[in-house]
Image 1 (cartoon, one colour):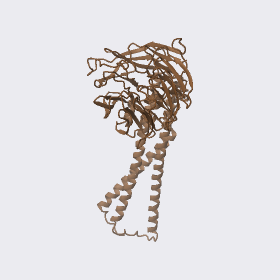
Image 2 (tube, rainbow, N blue to C red; image 1 turned 135 degrees about the horizontal axis):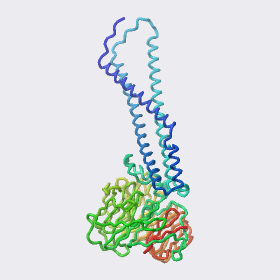
Image 3 (cartoon, one colour; image 1 turned 30 degrees about the horizontal axis):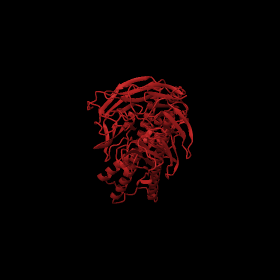
Image 4 (cartoon, rainbow, N blue to C red; image 1 turned 90 degrees about the vertical axis):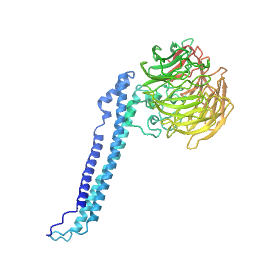
Length: 603
C-alpha cells in the first residue's frame, strides 16, 4: 500500500477548527437539554417554603417584613428570567454558528483535496457508496440533535416565562390580602384603565437591564391597589377598587372613621400607599410634608423642606387660591416626593428621612406653581411649564439626578402630567397652550402633538380607549384620536372648565365646570347626553369608581351620579367643611382633604 502524503497544513488547521466547533456544539446541546430537563423536574418558585410564605402573607397582609420577602422573590425571579432568557438565546445563536463553522471547514477541506486517496488493499466495490451513506447519516444525526436542541431551547424559554409570570402574579395578588384579586379588574385590552404590568417594564420599547429591576419600582398591580398621585394611578381619574363608600356626613360623624387636623394649609390632594397617607402644607416661611397613619389618622411624622441649596430666600407671591403648596405629591411605594411654590423639590423615605432635595429654580408664573408630580417606573416626572423656560423632566427617584429633560415651546400652564398605556406603548400626556403633546415616558422624546388648546391651562387631560380629551376655559373641549397620525375626533365649546379635569371611560366623557355644571358626552362622537347644575363652585376633579362619578363642590358636598347616558343622582354626602381638593379612594375608604382637616370615610 502506498504511504499517504502528509496532510496539508491548511487542511490540518481546518480539521482542528471543525473538531473544536463540533465539540463546542455538543457541549451546547447538552447544556440546553439539561436546562430543559431541570426546568421540568424542579420549580424553585413553587417550593414548600415559598408557598408557606405566600400563605402567611395572605393571612397577615400587614406584615411588612414578609411583604418585603415576597417582593424580593419577585425581583429575583425577574432577574432569573432575564438571565435565563439571555443564556438560552445566546446558546442557540452559538450553536448555529458552530454548525455553520463545521460545514464551512468540511466544504473547504473537500475543495482542497485535488486527488482521490488510494484505495485500501482489500478490494471493496462498495467502498465509496458506504462512505457516502455513513457521512449522510452522520449529517442527519447531527442535524437532528441540533434541531431538537433548538426546539427544547424555545420550549424552555416559553416555559420559564410562563412559570415566572404565573408565580409573580400569584405573589402580587397576595400582597394586599387573600381576596384582593377579586376586587381589582385587571385587563390588557387597552381600554380605559386597563394597563398591563408592561407599563412599568418594556412598554416604551426601550431596553432595561436586570440591574435596574433590583432597585425596585412598583408593578401596575401594586399601583392600582393604592392611590399614588393626583387623580390616582397614572393621574387619569380612574379608581380600580371596589366597595368605595357612597354615604357619609362629616357633622354627624356618620361613616367618618377619623378626622385629623392639618398643621399648615395647602391645596394638594392626599396620596395613599398601604397604611400611609401623605400631604404637604406650607406658608411663606415653612414648607412641610406630613405622613398620617391610614388606620388611626395620627400624624406619624413631619418633615421640613428647608436648607435646600438654591432655594430663594423669600417665598414667591402667589394667588390665594393656589397657595404655597398646591401640587399634589407622589410616591413609588419606596419614597415619597413633594414640590412647593418656590421650586423646592424633596424626596423622603417612608420614615420621614430626607433622601435628597434640590431647587428647580423659582417658578415664573402669576398664580403660583400647581402642576402635580407623577411617577413612571423609578423616575419622578415634573411638568415645569414656566414663563420663558417651559420643560418636562424625569429625575431618578433614588438620587434626584436628571434622567432626561425636554424643552417645550408652550406658555405657562398649571395642569399636571398623565401617564397612559395606549395599547402599544406608554405615553406621557401634557397640556399647555397651544397644544396637547405626547412624550415617550422612558426617554422624553416627543411622539406627537395637536394644536387644540389655548389660554391659561389648568385642567389635565383624560385618556380612554385610544382617545385623549383636553379642555380649558375660553378655549374648547377636544377629543384627539391618537395613532401614528393623531386626528381631531370632535370638539365642543358649550361647556368648558378652568380648574377641574375631565374623566372618561370607553363610552362616556364627564366634565365638570368650575361653576358647578356637570356634563356627560358620548366619548366617540361628542354627542351630549345630559347636563346638570349643582349650583356650587367646584374645583376638585371628578373621580370615576364602580360605575359612578364622584363630584365634590367647594362646600365639601360630594355629588355621586351614575356613569351612564342618563342622569341619575345616587346620593349627596356632606363633609361638614369646605374643600377644593380631589379625593383619594383606596381599600374601601375615601380620604378627603378639607380646609382644616383630613377625613377618612368608610364603614
